[in-house]
Image (tube, rainbow, N blue to C red; front, side, top):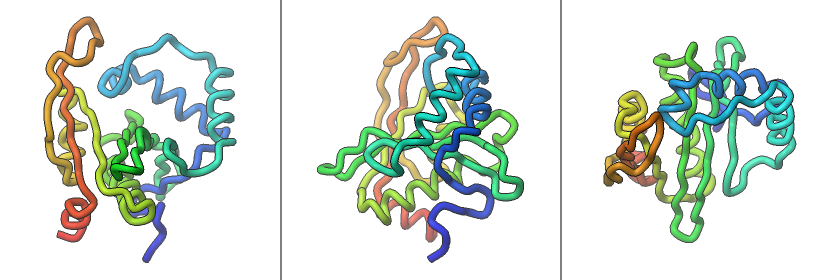
Length: 184
């Protein structure tokens, strides 16, 4: 039983007030934002400082939370993972991951997702994780499939962004499937 929050490449940790620059950089990467969310009007540096300070002051855990993805080798801010839409009765939750442009394609997202799943399945006793990915986001589809997620459906023309409607792919993984993928 090692450190729940640290892998070979990344560490998941709570948000600190000084992380505001990392979150600002994630928000300014419009290609990355568009692949996962809606593009929003720019926020001021003071807005990012206040937003990050508020999140840093939140108690850990709960039904919805965000953790920073930090590179083990140098302590740099690589991105963030989120948990949301937790349904404890059904044992279900959703996650999201965002990795900054300079840290992509290094295995950080996959390891961060694996650490988060191990915690949610092992410590929180949840049964299933779901994600929604835009059908055009090939990198995220490959990431989640590589971790063991299975496509469960597709919502056609479900979201509107960048001037067009796009399909959303629903993927899921259960705790037994994750354990099997992690050990096999």
